[in-house]
Structures are given as structure tokens and as C-alpha cells.
Length: 439
Image (cartoon, rainbow, N blue to C red; front, side, top):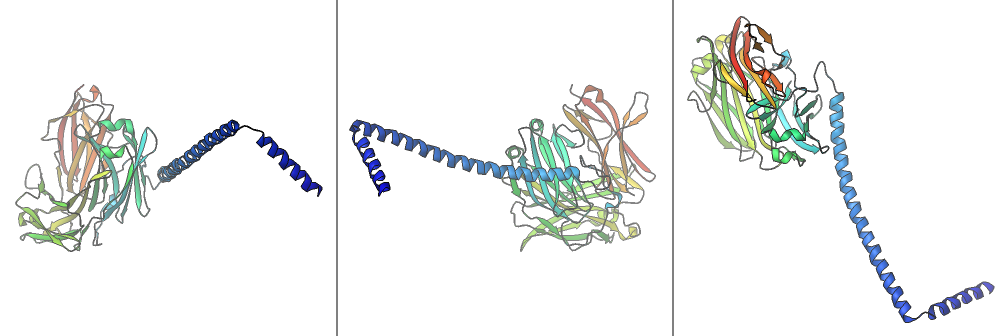
């Protein structure tokens, strides 16, 4: 009873106190409470918005962390003498006969990850069972520059022996403004994939799943042909993309010429023609090679191009190469005559001038031959002697070789005469290139 009395007394006191306040005081208190309520409602909504922003940021950082984990694993991964900071020369045992009825390299996805205000990572995932190597390159002022150690554009990292395999390019954003094209090549002896990136989309980042496009074939990669007959070869292009177009290429060496003549023929040559017809699931592509080319032997390549309307990839090229040799050359199984070598004249006839402009330039030396050719680049000194340049060798097969040297921070002192040299056993060829700058 005592406790209830105390409660009633307190209630009475509170009633008297409240009742003693004027109506104006009540209205003032109501307004204060309404103001407080609106303030707390705004704080509540701001909190909800902040949570949504933090959730998005958390998702972004999780993705960046995943991509950084990939890059970190690339740094730590080592296999043999592989150089993770740049492309390396292909191993001598790269050549093999591919019997699987499919193109040997399939790209799955490409991601551009904005890591910071200064750097972007481009990460490409692909699958292949073929021995291969990776080449990142870019075009600047019309020149193809392979990305090597110390390049101002970025650094290459490769993770192999995974399924899928991955390659990553760390790009310096400030160096992108001079770049005209950026592309990735994954090359084996008989297969290739080239991705051309959309420069306008890289800075913003993004992911892109690459549509499955394959060249299906039932023929072996090495083909013995009757030298007196035309050769017909068929492959299937597995793709429903209407933008798919094809290009045939035939590389051969005419050893009857002195020096040996390299034939680099495209589909518009009357001795080489092809037709595409629609079939379920894609297209059937038929190539006809004239008997005069079959008699010489050579490398026949099917290459298809697929356009991407959006995303960080603008174009994709898929290639498959067949080594064709006449039956008289069955013992050596070489597409080129034994003891032959020929240079691909990239810069025109020997003695042509190449203009190299800052900030970076490159010089290439490319040869085909049998046995496997060796290439190198030397600088001609004032006394006529030659100084061998430190170049990187790129070789995707047994019958070709390319050497490239890059000029970082181009200065006038690189001007002079250079020589591209190729050798296959006793056969040797060379071409001279004059380098000038616009400095």
C-alpha cells in the first residue's frame, strides 16, 4: 500500500506540473519535438544511404583484392627460367602435331581493374593445352612496341599451369595518352589469339565475358600433299556472331630465287582462295591452294576476326595454321625447302629508313626458314664493324623467328645503320635499316 501511495503522489505531482504550463509552452514543445523528429528521420535516411555506399565500396574493394591476389601470385610464380616481367623466347620443343579437333587457345574473359589513380590492371583468362607464349604490345606513332622490362607503359605478369591460365598487364595511366592500339597475343606453333582493346573503355574499368569462337578441324596440323594437284582444306568456324569475317594467309619460300624469295600471300591472290558457307552452329570455311604453291610447300593460316560492339575488347582474332609440304619432302616434314631462309621485309627494301619518334620505338627482324632460323639485330659502327644489340626473341614455331629491340626514352644517339640478320644452317640473309629520329 505504501508503494502504491508513493506512485499516486508522483503521478499527481507530474499532473500538476504539466497542467501548470501554458498552451504556448505546449506549442513550443511540440514544434521542438517535430524539429527533432525531422532531424532524426534525416539522420536515419543518411545512415541508410551511407550503408548502401559502403556496401558498394566493400564489393569494389573485394574485387580489387581478388585481382591483386592474382597479380601477387603472378609475382611469386616461377617456372624454369621464365621471366615474369616480360615475354620470353619460346622453348625449342614448341612444335607439336595438334590432333584435337578444335582451335588450341580459347579466351574466356577480360577485366580492367582500376587499382589506383595511377595504375590499371588488365587481366585475361584463357584455356589451352598447347605450349605457348604471351606477347603484350602496343602501337605508338605507327610502330608496334612489345612490352619488355622497363617499358614506360607497364609491366607484364604471367600465371601458367592453371585452368584457366591468366596473364596480367599493369598499366601506367599517364602513359596511355600516346597509345594508339593496345593488344595481347597468345601464340603457339599452330594456334593464335589476338585481342585488341578499346582504349576509351580501359580507364573506366569493367569486365567482359568473351564469346566462344573456335576453329574446328579434323585434319592434322602437318599435311602431306601431292605437288601436282591443288589442295582443298576445310575447317568449321564455331560461332553465331554475324560479324565473323575470315582471312587466308600462305607463307612460302621460293628457293629458286637468289636470294630466296619470301611469299606472303593473302586471300586476294588468285592462287589462294576461300569460301564460307553457313552451317548449323557456325560456318564452314573451305580453302583452295593452287598446285604451284603446294609444290613449294608452306604454312596455310585460317584467321577469323570478330568485332565486339561494347566492352574493353574491340576486336578479336583467332588463327589456326597448317604446315603443308609436298610428298617429296616427307622425310624432313618441313613446309620450307631444307637449308632455306628468307626475311619478312617489314620496313621495305634493304637500306630503307625508319623514323623513330619519342618517347619509345622498336626495331623488328623477322624470318622464316628450315631448319629453325636464328635472328639477331646489330648496329653498324663507323669502322664497319657490328655491335650485337640486346634483343628479345619471339618464336611461336619451328620455322619462324623474330627478334625485337626497343628504344626507351628515344634520343638522337640511336640514329645510325642497323642490320637484321637471319641464318638457317648455311643459309644467311641480311637487310639494312637506317634509323632516324625527329629530334
